[in-house]
Length: 186
Image (tube, one colour):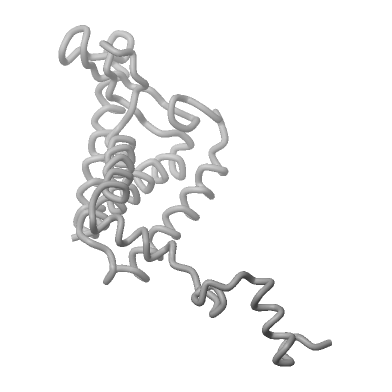
């Protein structure tokens, strides 16, 4: 299922970018209103991150994307049995979105954006950006509010508890007990 989500999202992302790059630049202002004053297609070549931040930091983004995707894929493989479906869907969307923009940066040097909510003057974005955003919001909601999400998060919060803490002793009490038993002699 995860691989299917990643592949379908990547195909939709790259197909929409190819169509936008071929069609929109020939229009006046490279824009086509779908719902006048609300939503339009507007072709932009973004050389930065979200909202145009960090312009021309191509190799930084490529490196960060490789590290982040590698970490998420490793997590999904390592903890797959403990992950519930919603968590796997969220991570798959985030990975797919990151890879979609990675492909653009690697081969073009910029990311192609085309969706624009003119009503609220929101940043121009693409399918990959939407996948990352939806995946991220659902991931946070899942981890904070669902029983399965909280349980998965609790697994990462577990730490090895020393015997003293299990018995309610402080570390100084444990130290004293160890010394009396010859455990901490120098």
